[in-house]
Length: 456
Image (tube, rainbow, N blue to C red; front, side, top):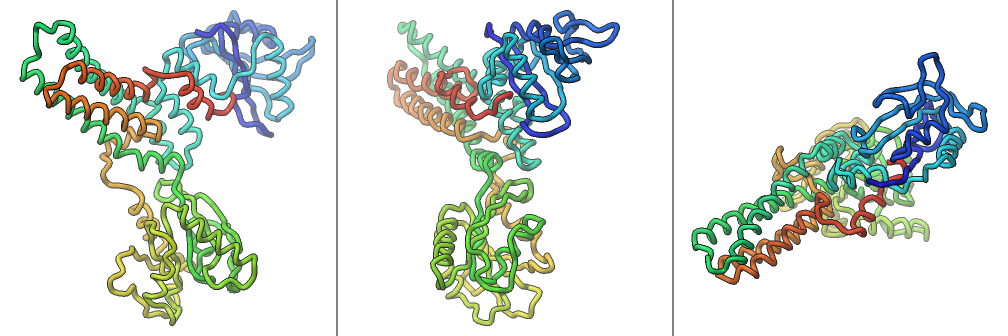
């Protein structure tokens, strides 16, 4: 437990109805006593108040009221940090919230570091490291699917699986080290075989978790999709349709878009960052040339390319489609202007997925959204494992754990000394423990909690 008391504004800065100042630590109630004057006949000071109670009163400075507030008292250990906690709800506004916070800091609290409240919850054993990361994922969630995945991780779905995996490895390690300590009782062939089966089962489980990594990372950071094509093919109109509102300027004049435009849309629960680009053609001026250069760069950096073509263009042919492919990326051909007379169909031999739409009427847009999700969302992740999608840090730790366990199994099956098996098995156990914070370093904790905002 920490012996100092921290405080911060826990709500976004700016004008609003309310702002919340959070105080946590051994002296939280004493600091609140110094700042708060309760109102009412039955009112009591925060230090005398029962846990999980709400009190009306005033924040006072030099005998004068600063603001009319509600103050919540939550006593350890039934709090987020497992420390005494006070939350002051004052009127919103930068000046009001800052004045209340400054008063709290002057009465014995210090300003919290980024993520320090959540870090204390971890260090005090309320949540593990994977659950702490889920708090950040929940804050940054941009779709309901991302929010649900973060909520599942915060509830411990991933943690329970990781703890079970680690317990299995520890039991195997204890079994091996017992034989190392008593070499006169050599390990029997059946025991070696049983350990090999246990290793294989753990490796299979790691691989199942690793298969969730692409989907987990897409939900957390989104996926970049570049919209490319000739001028006036309907790229900006397609962006507006996918977003559900007018974001890009649409004009019959070719070359309207001179720079890239980025906007995030919710596509079947997946956050997709669409990048509208300048039309690909022979540039007519230096500005358009730069726009085309940026278009090609966006396509190279994207994880998915939507190539928009005008199906009503009588000059459209296979050679044009192939010439428009700038990079080897997953690609969907979007045949726009389907509401106009046309007879064009994808040429034989083209394997790229094809969706016909009309950005004017909205025809085919829902089918395109289905195609986008089908291109980027694997069906290999079971519903059960979908509740435990891992992030990049978990993935790196599991890759190391799997490699170490493969080496341990290889040594075991090759009748190598148990000391060699134990070394690799211990490394695998250590790597798995990193995921939930059982084996951590100060640098790792700083990297995780440094991503949080102050006040969380």
